[in-house]
Length: 496
Ligand SMILES: Cc1cc2nc3c(=O)[nH]c(=O)nc-3n(C[C@H](O)[C@H](O)[C@H](O)COP(=O)(O)OP(=O)(O)OC[C@H]3O[C@@H](n4cnc5c(N)ncnc54)[C@H](O)[C@@H]3O)c2cc1C
Ligand code: SF4
Image (cartoon, rainbow, N blue to C red; front, side, top):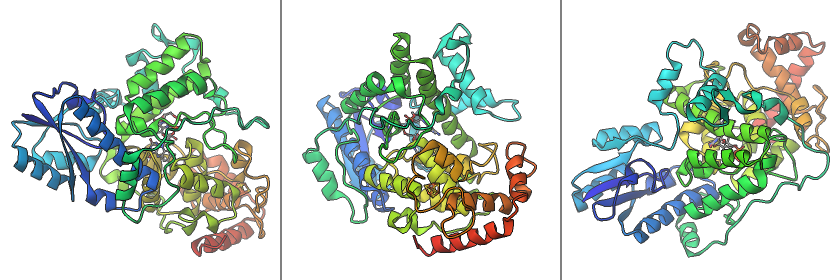
């Protein structure tokens, strides 16, 4: 008998090595590593989602007739060694793992790998795209992907006459009708969910699972179809908006399933493209959504493989502030925007992209929070976290800790952006227009302070030089810097 070893983020019968496996010739090994589960303080919904999905996938394979060695082991390495000792497989295969350390482990064990189809651009293809280019722009990559895979194309031209409908997708939140987006589907929890919850270590935190996150392929497919039929038509216009009373808006909530294998990217893209072809979805929504998956997701994946392992340790802006206490206890802030997003993370183990980038990430950037500590916190907290996607999004996109390898400018902004794109500022204890005084908005103050602190680095960057010069010309620059120091001291001390 051969063995196919399946990692916890490869839970799909159609992924790589498992695709050709048959119950009469192949046994399946799945390892639940106690060391990994105990290694950090996970959000309870994240730990539950990952483990429950693994256990249910093992059951589905058994129902198909496979012998599954579902092994609870202190470490992954131990699990493999024990499996080999017990079953002496004729041959062992694994699909190319999705993290650098897992690939090292597989290589050190001498196990053969099969190419993965969890992404549509393999790093060897990406190398061809990048060859001879001075800079790798995501937009160029995305167009290349559109042409290669034929999504939203008429011959070699984009459907609708343009590649990118981003301009239509940046509307602020609507003034009324904040409940216009369908509520996410939920399913009832059962005995397996309960067993997993009983098995979790004591240091998990956050609100308990409610059935929001699917843990089987069937439920993940149901979530995909619900999204495409009910929500995708309105995905585009308010994609960047944030609302206190609505945590999901028209976001798909599909990243956890794409990342643990319950869904494959081509089936998600096909479903969206089909709905567009049938005239059910406007072009700005279809293109906006397809760009996230065919463009951003694949681009981030390839940046990870191109730049790891050193990339994860970068700290170009020398940001050394320990993670401010409010991240683990939102009661420690009166900032409405931070408080709302952090409470949302506690409640759902999720926040949408703009909340991650322009509230959480922006705050970590302008406070000079250590990139590795912020990455760790996000990794523990988010339902869809995985090293390949977390590291480039935090180190590169959010914190400019890579010195501009991924993003051409830091995504720093003050209260004005948050006020335009959300309804958080109304009723906040702070005044987003003020940059000095007790009620000055921390985002506004720290944004100007950030520009001054890093003026030498950014004044020559054409994408941000204007903001640096504006900071230099502030009439009250010393008072702003003084206010920034007071705010930072308060944050460090965990004072609201
Ligand atoms: C600081 C920071 C940390 C992030 N950490 C993660 C993470 O750990 N895991 C994760 O999957 N995404 C991460 N992202 C990217 C993005 O925010 C999430 O993929 C998205 O919010 C997931 O929610 P959704 O499925 O509702 O997305 P939607 O808004 O519905 O978008 C559709 C899909 O596009 C893909 N996508 C969109 N943007 C990105 C991106 N920048 N990188 C990769 N894929 C993208 C995702 O697969 C997502 O499901 C992070 C972004 C930032 C700024
Ligand atoms: S005023 Fe400042 S702190 Fe308050 S919600 Fe607006 S941006 Fe956030």
